[in-house]
Image 1 (cartoon, rainbow, N blue to C red):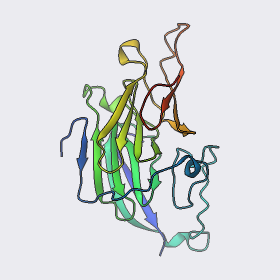
Image 2: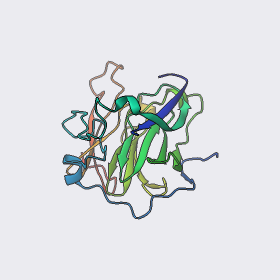
Image 3: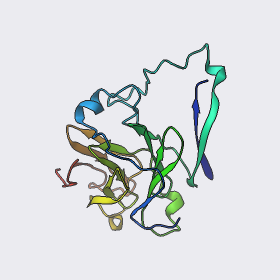
Image 4: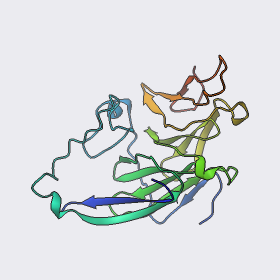
Length: 217
């Protein structure tokens, strides 16, 4: 989806830099996302790119069915940043986390669409519309972002503030991310891109500690 994308939710019957920018709504007393929850999410949650680690992309919710789907009405909508958007929002404990083009992450109240916070990564504005990210990860009390300049960033789920940041390649080497991380047994697993340079030491996969951001392998 190009230009200004629109995030819409249907139901049945400010300028910032690389810090969190708060809205009126707040994430209060967040429920930490555990490894067990990632392996078997609550039906109301969507904790990974395809919801579960096996990648099924299936929701067990059954309130909406063939008998009432025609009664769906728009509840709220939210405009995303300009650029190409292939993102999958994550939902946990009533809040929605979405990766915008340009390495911008926003948190919204999933019930009302109210803005909670925003993280906007510093970068050359000429590159922002090209810096697309397909997904995020959530773990413990963090929202985890892979960045265009080959960093992994842990954001505080309450405020969007940076808790830690780890460089795993560096844009000076031509490495970047275009897909989001997954979390397995406490380890953030992320695959680099930058394979078009025809060298032996091009793409690779990294593992980062999900709590501290320390590079493991």
